[in-house]
Image 1 (cartoon, helix red, strand yellow):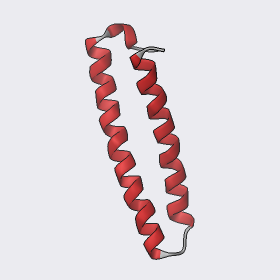
Image 2 (image 1 turned 90 degrees about the vertical axis):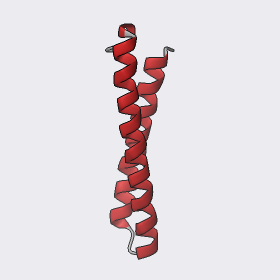
Image 3 (image 1 turned 120 degrees about the horizontal axis):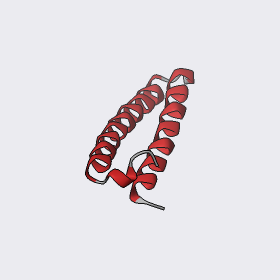
Image 4 (image 1 turned 180 degrees about the vertical axis):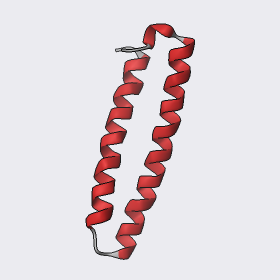
Length: 68
């Protein structure tokens, strides 16, 4: 498995986790729990954005990873 495909797989997993956190944050009734889920959602989104930027750099520097 190439580095590019590993990063893409990690991104897909994180996006799935972000979706789950989003659902949990809207379904919970407890304000403190909702706040925790929203914080985790914010952090996960930040990590996803960083990884997407890293993937763009990786694909630019190593064209063989593009489209894998």
